[in-house]
Length: 106
Image (cartoon, helix red, strand yellow):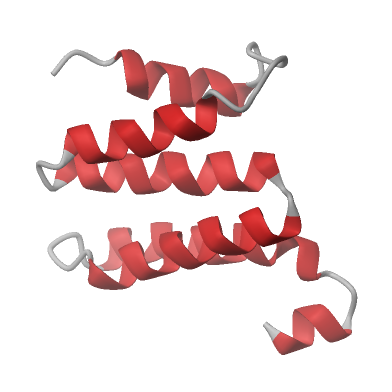
């Protein structure tokens, strides 16, 4: 994180954390602890930086992980709260992906 901040690319750190969480899910689908931690850090960082797009991506990843661990309601609540902050751009891939996850039947 410090290198990214030093080099002036800290604004993408939330996305790097999210992608690391996705890789953790792929490497070991049975262990979700690392992925959850990375997604949580990505969400928190995106909030602090005011990056709603990176927050949406990380929250969508977290919601998908929670869905896969039988905690769909918790994930959908988090995602719905984030999704509701948007007022436009609903045809973008990230918002469409989030909407599809929210609309998925139980």
